[in-house]
Image (cartoon, rainbow, N blue to C red; front, side, top):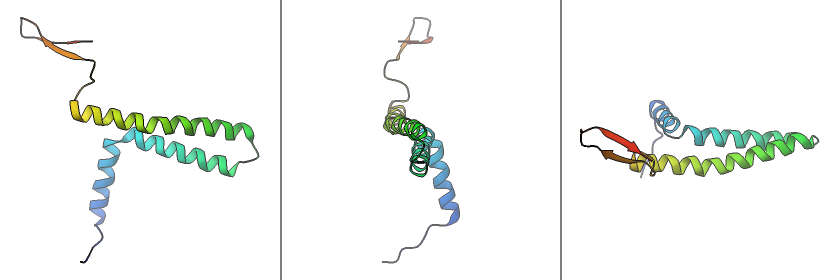
Length: 96
């Protein structure tokens, strides 16, 4: 079985698809990675390490949150707490 590497155009389209589908997840990942790098390289500054640790933990919580929200919107198209109703005049109204 012979495998070939994808072309540069396929890589670019895949990266753009991921960026447009999961922008907040990628932002949380980049933020957490940057905080880890900064806290490793600045071990003498306890205040900066503490702030980076807090920000990295918030980014770690944000990744599954934004992923689940994206999957929920992809599956249902709207948040679960909105109910669409049609009044007698034929107009659609959104109720919470």
